[in-house]
Image 1: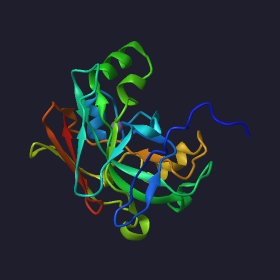
Image 2 (image 1 turned 90 degrees about the horizontal axis):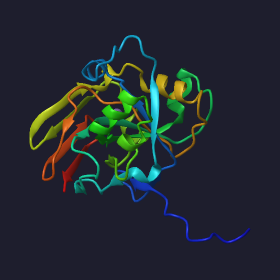
Image 3 (image 1 turned 135 degrees about the vertical axis):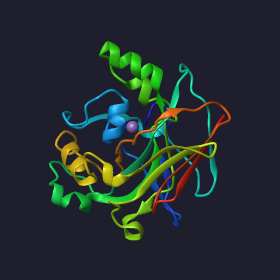
Length: 233
Ligand code: MN
């Protein structure tokens, strides 16, 4: 085998709760508009749209050990930087054409994540019918809290999901409000992509997305999966 031209980038990985192990990230898939109230606030009809997906690069993940606050630089090229709190599914066993009833066998854990978004660029791209890449797939756009393994947290289906900015409620819902459930999302996604161990699926955000500025403190959580604290700097 020939040597690499230069050293390969380090593996993207983030902590696992109550463990010295880290979860190595392969790909990041994100579901768009998966809570009815959020679909409505984005100007869509939640009843008529099948799920759709976009990706972030694996190294968009940024994290800290449990209990620490992540320092997140305000990104370039936006004046409307939005939070989206999401349930993140971690794939531990790969597969294609996974049946809904077997989908949970492929999940090794869950985490609280943020799908950070340059909302102004997303609006421009949507209007022009162009790809969302610059609005969704930028550097450090996927802050994530430590992973909770299924052996510890099971498969949550009824759990509060919330986000506060500077102590004020912004988003509050329950993951039982997902339009496409976790097993349905895995089944659907696996028809288009061969899922691999290390894949993450951001399952969509509830209503209440909004802007943050430098100096703001974001706190978000999902019952049973801990919390995530992010300071915008
Ligand atoms: Mn999202």
